[in-house]
Image (cartoon, rainbow, N blue to C red; front, side, top):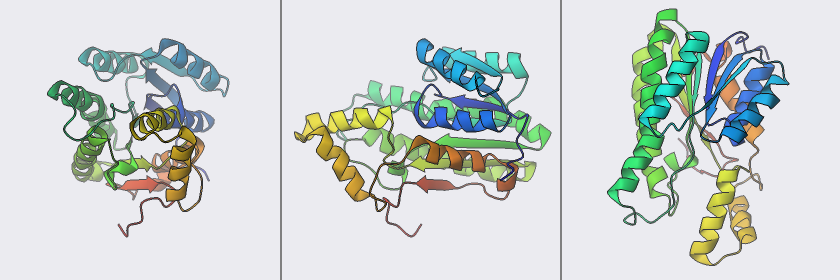
Length: 262
């Protein structure tokens, strides 16, 4: 399928590994110019080398999107390199696990900066230009927790839902300007984040890591974990010219794990 995004400038956040890196690979193959960022200098450097090997021009930025300084750095370096962003893939790491009343307000504030503020500030920086050019795509990577809250993930359950509400409102405001706004909700996907959640669950419950993974697979009708490239394919489609009539959606890519009608 011709996606119609060759030459577009794409900012992929948290792209040193996992789903976001797989998405960056898709954009590289489509002939896009890439800006990628991560807190980990070594990992983002390795990601840049792999993406450049696919023929993509890549700007790699070391920055923590949970901080004001990190947000400023990503915005400034992106604008200096390209003067615009056509496709924004908003993504950060996940917050700590814990029961509903176990987190201090400081933890809630940090999680809000990580998950919610980063999306708000990046859209405020780049969506106005998309509207002026009458074309743009915003895709946030959230979680199936938006549709089905997960035990011991109260920070993620709450704040990813807030991100979804923000994006749904934004989608209505910018749709007539040719800008679409959607989110992708991964299910149990084979990433380092899922490895960390398996370890936390094992510590909390006394189950082995293997049984935790087996439980997740059993919850998923396809009977396995998802692959990052399967999520990346959906992100690429939502970013395409072909998906211009699809906006305001929270798209589950979960192997059927959330058994709901809507």
